[in-house]
Image (cartoon, rainbow, N blue to C red; front, side, top):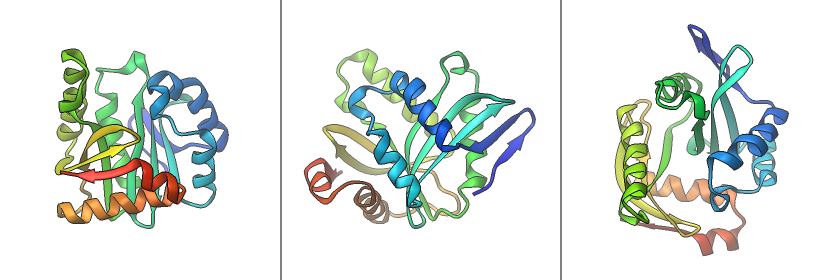
Length: 195
């Protein structure tokens, strides 16, 4: 994977030190504790080629980050966030578009979005629908597949690079991605597909 850039922004693969800093300083702010896997699981997967982490930079300032689980040519967007001061500015959409050339070796890219039907209240539902709409505006497709991961319900989207895959293909790839990341017992207890 290479780095890419357009205009004043550049997408770069993060170094191990940048990954640790992102995790400790930003991911703990951007994601609920129950959605964060241990940093050790990320670094272990990274060391064996099963993970990739990118940042969107303006000079030396990181504006956004994206972490992917990788199993062969199958990718799962594990974490994606824009720094709070840049949210609502179009940075997230630009980053999503700039990632595509770096992921050209992928055959399929799956994105989880929290299922709106399982929202805790109206504000939570609105936030979930806004996240889904963000990815759909960015060219992603709703696959119709749904999953429960560690108790959280998701809709599965695909970021097509060349073709849109059948739901059965997405479901099979999704399971392989989690099998590559989790110990077998943890996988069996916490990953379920439906829909």
